[in-house]
Image (cartoon, rainbow, N blue to C red; front, side, top):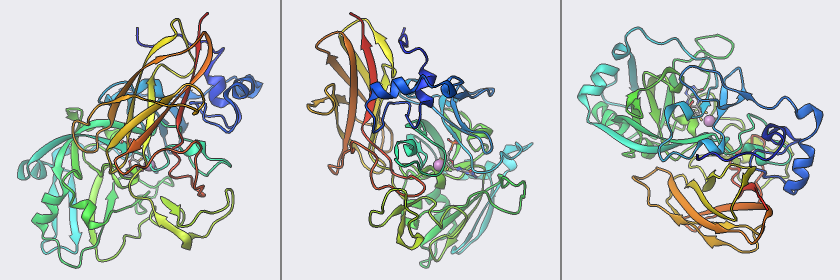
Length: 410
Ligand SMILES: Nc1nc2c(c(=O)[nH]1)N[C@H]1C(S)=C(S)[C@@H](COP(=O)(O)O)O[C@H]1N2
Ligand SMILES: [Mo]
């Protein structure tokens, strides 16, 4: 049995403990966090998703629906569709009666604007499949102190599925990209939260170079099956390695722009980082922000579960690590609160933008309480900080070292 017994009275209590995140990452020592977890208000625990075809993900919000994958549910090399996180900004549109007749418009800075059906798209352009990360820009937000605005993702706003589709570059080349093209603007069919269908719930885009990258796909299959409605079916974009918000679900239009796109989700503090560090908790100035593009380096332990009670001092640790545009070079493990580190074994990714499995054999010196920390370093030498740094009002880029707690039976 892969899942380990949980020794805490209730893991949920810990999840809900005042500002204490699931993986125990907090400014407080974990022992204190556990004690706080017994607060009466915490007794209810997180709400778990009840949806056909989906596992019991942790619901972060109902309207719009947002749900994250608990770390111990991320142990698969390819994230099964039922375990994949959900992030919506608006409402879920109705499923079309005929998926193949779904239309996508390509217009703006192209020689031959087109309206192409999904059926045509599938047959006209080469179909390709890659295992690629999709990660919400807000993943890790809960680790910021003071709290940043938005869904309090721990590390579960990320997954690596196998996506099948056509290259956006092939479609744009067929439309003839003009030299004036600098950015894309993406639109989906989901109604705004208000129910107003004339107002996009979100409309982001990417620089034309990222749109033309051979891994940026218009996708119609997830893990070999028709893309489910909740994940943007029948057709969506996957812009791998970058904030998930540009991977538009229910894709209806790609507007090729002669300037940076300015749809909802491009301005204000949305998907933006502070250009120069600002005081945590301060208001900040929109003018001093830059667009969040690639996601930062992160390792997440998938086995054992946080709070596992283990019989042996020797544990076989597993997890995944990824790094936006870059490859993960090393993952290091510490069992003494970051004083000493030992390298884990890191597998090569099956293709660019896939997460990488790491494994480590950890020998703990005695029975009792331990924390196991995992830290990834990417091909550029960039590693994870001990705490979420570079605070910004909407909490992007929070990627502190991953921590789990284990209790070794005596
Ligand atoms: N049309 C549309 N596309 C969207 C969104 C949305 O609200 N509407 N959410 C985006 C965000 S913020 C993320 S992180 C991913 C989540 O995709 P998933 O729900 O399949 O995990 O979809 C992106 N695409
Ligand atoms: Mo997102």
